[in-house]
Length: 165
Image 1 (tube, rainbow, N blue to C red):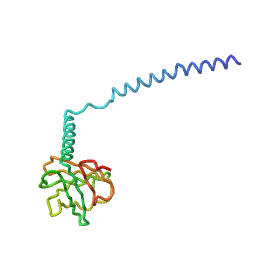
Image 2: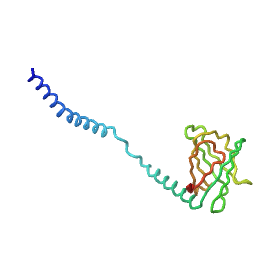
Image 3: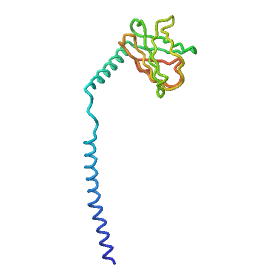
Image 4: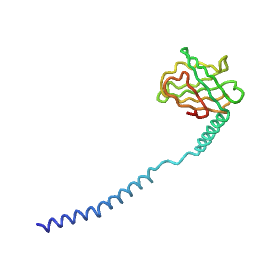
């Protein structure tokens, strides 16, 4: 009886010693075949435009930092947006404000703000609490400031340079 048990133990050990690596090799070959057969598609010919757009975004942000662009946004209950803009250059004839909600695209909007007595004004409608991505640009598109804000946007500060603690 002891010889049979010893033989079963040797067979089990042999199975583990040979079977496990053989399974790993077979699984690796299977994954390689799937990867080659159904791999990621090649990039489209127009893909370089994405890189150029990113370069432009970075250049616009650098230009805004060079101009030390900073602003405060106020939203009135009537839906009027007012921005007090400060920058180290002459004020632009108009500015654009993009408001992109973090989870609800139906709340997204783009507002053109024109000079008014206390900065720039434009109708932006009701802006509920939430997570927002804001982008402020001049009408010519020569600079851009982006900010992620959560909560109420009334009184929000937007700055091209990081705020020192």
